[in-house]
Amino acid sequence: MPVLNKILEGIDIDKKLKEKIADGLLVMDKSAEIQHDKKGNIIYYKETKDIEILRFDENIEEYMAREVLPHVPDAKWYFEEDLSKNNPVVKTGAEIPFTRYFYKYQQPKPSEQLKQSFLELEKSVNKRIKRLFG
Image 1 (spheres, helix red, strand yellow):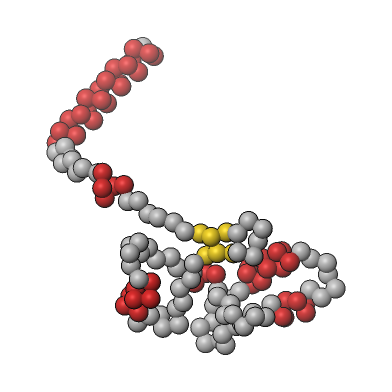
Image 2 (image 1 turned 180 degrees about the vertical axis):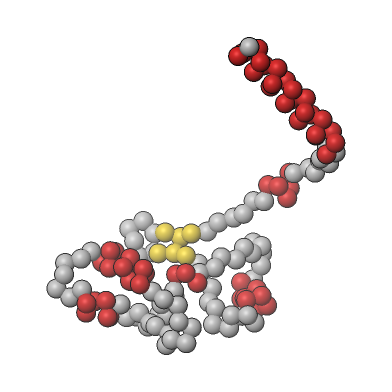
């Protein structure tokens, strides 16, 4: 952002627009130096964000150590929250896989039976078209 600020110096531009411009110009460079904000916090590249779904009773640190850190050693977990606003934002969620709990498998009809049904429908449609235009 410092380079962009220097380029846009003297131009009256909204901070959010400036952030959008910066996001559009970002390019992933895994060999680059880790960037920090003014408070010293790491600035994460938004495109690398990933979401994991855990069981409610799963310990996050144990999950990270077992499933994520062996593959991405510099990964970090966090909850999405912004408590600095007038209306604090805390994103939490739950997945309810309805098909896993409520779906009952039904054997599909045999292909020959389906073929016969389609042929009958086609004959019926053709007959109605003849009546309509005949």
